[in-house]
Amino acid sequence: MKQIYTIREILQKDNAAVEAVIRSCLKEFGAAHEGTAWTDPDLGRFSEVYCAEGSKYWVAVGEDGRIVGGTGIGKLPGADGVCELQKMYCLPEARGTGISHTLMDAALGYAKLYYKKCYLETLPNMIAAQKFYEKYGFVRIDRPLGDTGHFECDVRYIKEL
Image 1: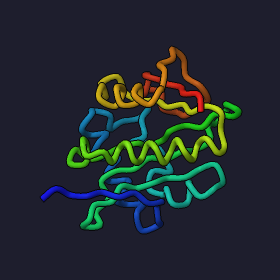
Image 2: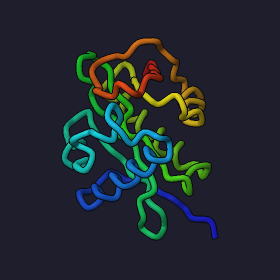
Image 3: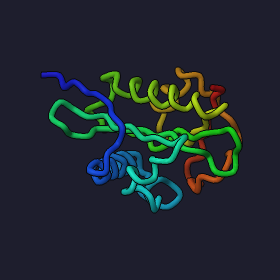
Image 4: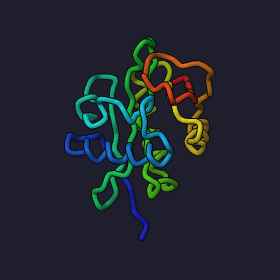
């Protein structure tokens, strides 16, 4: 039977599950190292990090209550009026189900309330993700914006909101 997924804002009880999803995806793409989200000090504290105005994180949840993905919006340090699409990951079982579109729609809808542009960084081998971002109107740029600390994520995009 096909699983149905929904999204909601992150709760404190979700922190460990979201961290596990992100670490699983980073391992899958060979990015379990410094310079990626792997070493972010806030990785297991999303419910606390994403509680300020202009910052929010959503989780994708299966009918069984299991978290299979998520994404966030946060201010991009060092870039006025620009937010960052952050930590958008889905486990393989949730890919192709449409839940990534639901997550993206929520994130961009929220971002428009606070920011003029949305920035993101990804890895060169995340080809499907790059195509997904381009479908949403993200345009690839050559240089980093702000200071994310993710020096290994050298594929960068920006989108006018």
